[in-house]
Image (tube, rainbow, N blue to C red):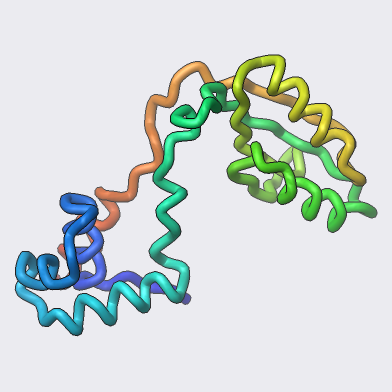
Length: 159
């Protein structure tokens, strides 16, 4: 299981403040050895804790101004095909297997409502998809944010 300790958290918070900082600059700012910072960043990248830079992009920057959430029902006998098919739709930027009435919750981006209709039709053509219920996001009121959790992790060393 991946675990971010206080030193990792301090490094990541420093990167939030200065995303283009070099390892040397981070080590000086944090008072850590350069090799320590380098090794920890490499480990965080290799174990998948530190995700790719593309996750930081705003889809609106390349024309995808509409965000929607789809609750998808899957035919249980075709669940594997449905899961593989949903991964192949580029506009599905995130998907989760869920409990409750729907089997999957997908975050989808589209250029406009007509494009969303096309994407919905494409998703419903995937083998195993039974039904989709779509909700359009009007405004992102709380974006993904982890800074507060990193701050808690950074303070845990003092306990």
